[in-house]
Structure formats: structure tokens, C-alpha cells
Length: 453
Image: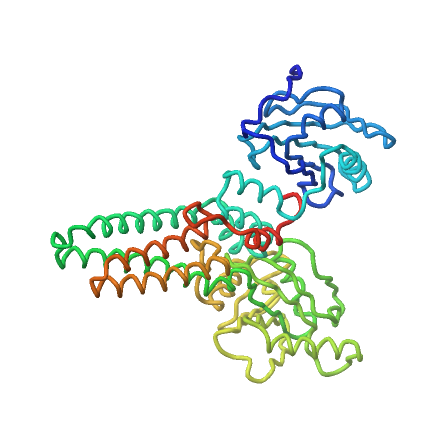
């Protein structure tokens, strides 16, 4: 075990008046382990209070016995990351403690009793990272988008935002606009040296930037699809194996199955990835007309409404039976006809043969479902948030005004409008050239974050 070292300099200049903050960084405390993050100048005081020593060497995980006062002692692993080379840009200390809500609460209560420490608010660690220049505002928003992602496609887009892909594109556009402003303003004193071809080049640059910004708006327009799971409804007569087929596609038992007809009486929905698409599999009660209880009849009625709302209907019948009665109008591109238990019976033309029990034919079924959904997921998309859209639209208005001014040979106005467009682009990233980001904007951005992020 490495020897302790004293609390080294934070490298942040004059001490901040802000309190040192702490919070659980691992979500629910009921797991086997929990990480408690502490950020600010008082981390050295935490070390003295909890284990009577100094901070450990930077970026080395070491064991410490924490003094929790009346709650006893807690065996923990701790790691220290000195500012400004930390996530927040401040001195950061992490306590890796045993999970369980009661144990974690005792550690938090002990920290709350140390002078200078306060519980962190939503997104406060990420906010400090932004304020210390450790990340741009769009990347900070990407962290929240990752946490809030509901589908794989939405997660991929959020990860690209958090990784700075969007920010790098914006930085390129900002640099391009700055170069154009410099060229135009450099020509103001010598207008006689500027010919029509040069002005044409200026407007061409404006149009190119505008096209790239418009593509971001196009991505934002389809963004809702990233979080939408198309509904794939399994319907058919009782005992056709619909529930078994749903379980087979999931690769696990999620829906109750039984040889007795009418086992499924309620609608069961489960998220899944089928044929490379994020979907919602919906299992419904078997459709029959005789020997139906009131409860089962209600389930059949619910199934009928699910069929009407489906993006794709998978009509399932058993290969060794022919007692299905598809509802009128159940035709077209959004229906997949499936013959289950193919190992027991005959083949029907145009039907996909599968065996849920033997897991055969599932790949063909998954591909057909994906084909019925049509289109492609936006695999290269980056998450474009409503705040970004507002800034992009404002930038495009400024670009339109700049183009008009340049066409009228009012170059100084054109340059001024281009600076305005660039400021809107920079505002997305929270760049200095956009002016200081208002507290109201930061409050709105970080209010949706988790505590501990």
C-alpha cells in the first residue's frame, strides 16, 4: 500500500467560495457497491475526518477504514484526483463503499456533518466541469441524454453528443465563419480590390454553412423516432404458441405459457431488439368465439385494440391446426403470417414456418418484422436537443441576412450578421465568443440531470 501524501495544490488559483459537494454517483444504493463522489476544496478535510490522515496519492485506489461516528466504521476503497485534471476541474475524492440504502445513508450523513460540505444538486458535478472548462455545454448535455436514452438508437445518438462529435462539427463551422468575417472585414478599407468572384466566394461559404446547419435540423426533425419503439403485436387463435414465440425472440421466459388454451388473458408488452430494430413486442389473448369467460373476452377485446394500434401484426397459427379466423382487413405490408410448431404439421404457402420450442425460423421471422417496419434507423445521428434547434434557427436567420447584405454590397453589415450567426453556433457549445452563458440557461440545462452526475 502506498504511503499517504499531503493534499497537493489544486492548480485552480484563488480559493473558491463555493461549498464542496457530495452525492452518490452510482444510482440506486441497493447494489453491492456504491460510489460517493466529493468535489471541492474540502476533500482534504474529509480525509482528516474520516480516516485521520492525508489524501492518498493521486489516481491510486487505496483501502481506508472510514470513521462514521455513531454508525461505526466502514471499510472502503478511496481514490483522489486533484484539480484541474479531474472530471469537475476541482479536487475530487471518491469513496467506494458497500451498497445497501442504510449503509450508504450512514456515509452520506457523516459527510453532511463535515464543515464546508453540502449535498450536490442535480447535474452539479457536470455544471462545475463546464464552468471549469473541462467540457463544452453540448457534451454536458450529452451525459444527461445518455442517462435518459430509452432505445439503442437513442443511446448511440446521445453517446455521440457526449463524445463531442456535434461540438467538433460546430467548432469547424465557427472557424469557417470567423475566417470569412476576417476576409470581409479585411476588404472594407480596399473595396476596389474586391471583384465579383470574391463576393461570390463569400456567399458560397455562407450557403455551405447554412446547408450543414440545415442538416442538423433535419436530424432533429426525426429525433422522436430514435426513442420510439414500434409496436409488434402477436395475435392469433389460442394455443398457437404466441407467448412461446415472444419468449423465443427474447431469449428468455417473460410471458407465461401453458398447454391450456386461454392462458394469456391480458396484454403483455416487453421491449426487445429484433432484426436490428428496437421494438415493443406485444402478446395478446388468443382469438376464439366459444367457451370464453368474461375475463378472457375482455382480454380478446383488448387484443383487438392492440391490433388496430400496431405497427406490425404477427398473426400466428399452429401448423397442426387450421382454426384461425383473422379479423377482417388484416392484410397488407404490415402483417407477418407465421406458422408455429412447423415441426408438427404442414406448410402453408406464403407463411413463415417457425418452431418456438426448437428456436428454428426465428432469424427469418425477425428479418421479416424489420422489413415490415421499413426504413432504417438513424445510425449516424447525433442527439440534437431543443436548445440546439433554437440556436441553429437563429444562426440560419443571421446567415440569410448576411447573404442579403453581401448581395447588396453592404459588406460591413454582412460581416456583422456573420458574427451574429457565429455567436449562435458558439452558444450551443457554451463558447466564450458567445458571451457568458446566463445562469438561467445553465439552470435549465442541468435541472434535468441526475444527482451525482
